[in-house]
Image (cartoon, rainbow, N blue to C red):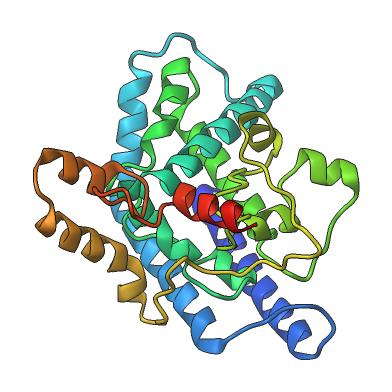
Length: 295
């Protein structure tokens, strides 16, 4: 099956799953809350994401090909061991890309739209960025091409990783068996990631494996006594895909116009979201510290 045909299968499967979840939720058979305009905004974001990715695909592929010119090994894409190693290394790379995307405003501006919905369902999974490729969020994967993995193999594994993450955007699935919850990213873990509660904020960056969050101190379990409050710290309250895609870039531009000196420019662009020169910004660390003090 060709790459384009595989993409078509994934697209049809996602649309079908969204329709099924929304229908069962509407009948009260599962837990699934949908707002029509919210879901349509998510699909509009996905459509824009596909257009941009197709237009910029040469940049991503070209960057990986360029890195492969200096590869230190030749890894066969027909070997099972190569796919197993790539699965682990790709997931490790995704963890750090995702963590940086939450902690560096320049990449957060591209990623924030995925968190802008106040609902949590399968349509939220397709709310994808328009500017990620443009600002280089694909660059963390260059090292895999340098190791010797073929560029096409890397991109295909990225696709499988993201396809896995589709099903975890749901409230219909509760906690799974303990061993599954320990090893893998699950709906429970990812509900935490999409929550704006101080306890849950900027936690559980995993793609497939939870080992990275557990190893690097970013894991937080979902609690029965604290339901996730989905969305942003400051919600934008819009279904306009243009505003969803660009609101944080516009906000950054306004902050840059007010910046005084190179330090503030760097802080505004590459500091954590909410950074302020006077130290009074609503960063994740500040929000969590204030919550812990109250608690």
